[in-house]
Image 1 (tube, helix red, strand yellow):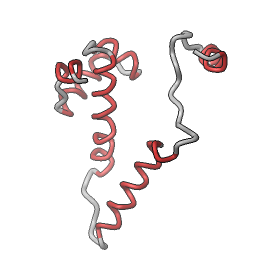
Image 2 (cartoon, rainbow, N blue to C red):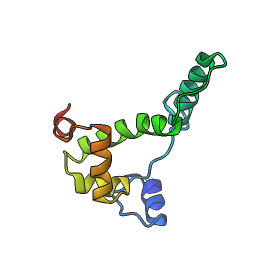
Image 3 (cartoon, helix red, strand yellow):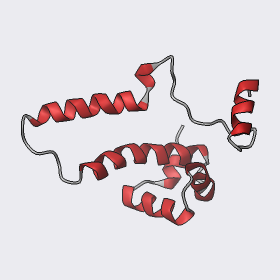
Length: 112
């Protein structure tokens, strides 16, 4: 870990092995908010004056939440307690989201 990363994590009260999430400033094509903006712009253009889907917020959040949880479960090798800690969620909340989103924990743990 670089000295800068160590200083940042220490100032945030995080252990030295924790690297805080930050947007890639040099690569806007990999920026999550830019990708979301592009997808939403496309979605609203395709409506051509019709109404958006009901519960749009829930739909969009599940589209982001599902791959996030899958990646964290893969990183945690399927350990749901560790994944919940990484995500900052209660273990039972994570389990509920896994059920609601139809995530296969074993598949996440085993994927390459």
